[in-house]
Figure (cartoon, rainbow, N blue to C red):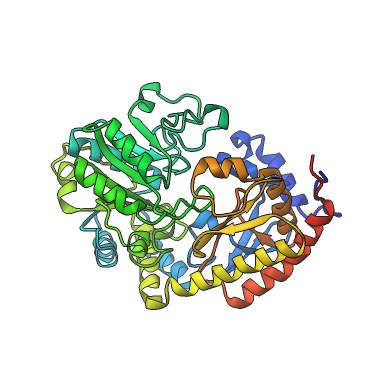
Length: 452
């Protein structure tokens, strides 16, 4: 294949900064996934609304939006004012403030299952708290999770996330592989991995470990892998199995929370979990996350039997930001998530039309609020991808990377793994402009791509 190139180098300053970073920052980045960006991890100077600007002066219509955290657009003035006002009062007290009550009360009003909440700085921390609480509450050791679902980068959150085909395990018993070295081996043994959107298989896995499962954790829409929505009856099956087993139903709404509406994906799909993990959009770009759920489940935390701590929990600066974010969702009202969904569908349809025009096997899928662009391998079947293994078999990652680079050069920024987010700051005009830019990128990709 031909590698996309630009002359003169439109990323020269980013390249220089990345080279400089090698001498101080391990690997040059502070999150391993950021090294995926080609041709170089970009450095940004500022953003405004739907637009993002790098240090070389390149402008992007941004559909990456901070891995989904910037639901409200870049640098919204109201949020900046709220943070500044709190900064003048104090950054951190390691104590209580009225803000934490105000944010908790908003979550109670917005999410029907949020009877009580606890705050952390990242969703990865919240995942650990949820699993600890589930085991303590039920007295059972195992957590069931699904292939392709991401629950933070910790020892527990990544078990069975995305194993390579030669380490999948069998169809009946998916492997408990963790992608990182240095993980405590015994941790992996506390997980049961199942395939997403296969209800009979899920029943078999639960029956296989009857009486030992403390919780079933899942992304209501599997945004981290191909944006796979639940098939009819999937979420209801999880709820019924949890009820029958005395296990907790844990919805990881790190991505879907508030993006899918004020009540999250659980309200969007009509299901009520026991615990909910919230991150990203709850802070709008500041490090903030929450565990929400039924009051009775928090008794072990309230009593001190389950340790839940953190110096920066309930940090007033992050709480001020979160309060503004939640109020913005409430201000938009019944128009959300409908308007975001409609714009996302418009972009999906436009990308598919361009793909057909230029003979590119790109297939957008997802609910529009967030979606994935799968690039089909030669000979791969058409149709919706519903589970991780099917995605791994059908998605042509190198070819998508080439098209993604072409899009980047035209000022359209999507996530390296093919995920697109729509922010509340995006307009119909932005979508139409993005599609105009995308056509240039698609035409270039069609000219340059050669199968190897």
